[in-house]
Image (cartoon, rainbow, N blue to C red; front, side, top):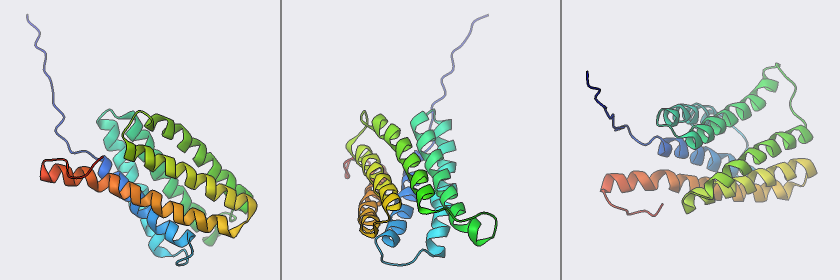
Length: 190
């Protein structure tokens, strides 16, 4: 009896652009709010729950299927971040739990900053846009946490502006590989 080695080639699409677009667009919109352009509203909540939240969780599962531990961890965790943030906003309005005070929100954001630091360290072996996305996200979490801990409004506004930059970088990281794949050549640098 002879044994035959069968190699199965993965021909599935790259799920990362979908996760990055969910992260990028949701981050841009929330930080337009943080920068003071408009109030927190159903548009941000819906984006946070669905494309920022559930969308990234689905992408995390798709990355798991591809054997990408970093992608699974990043998209899964940040997807659940968005879902938990929406829950923090909605649970008090539904009478299920008390709204967090500024200190506890600062702790929440600081813990996410700690996770982001670990993920940023991983990106040091990756391309520059990925380093920038995670580096700017680390700065964003730090600014947001400091803003909550200190209560200084201008820090939240600066965080909003920095968060827009972070979201735009994730948006670019999402669309660049799609454009390159569609055109069959490197048009956008990644």
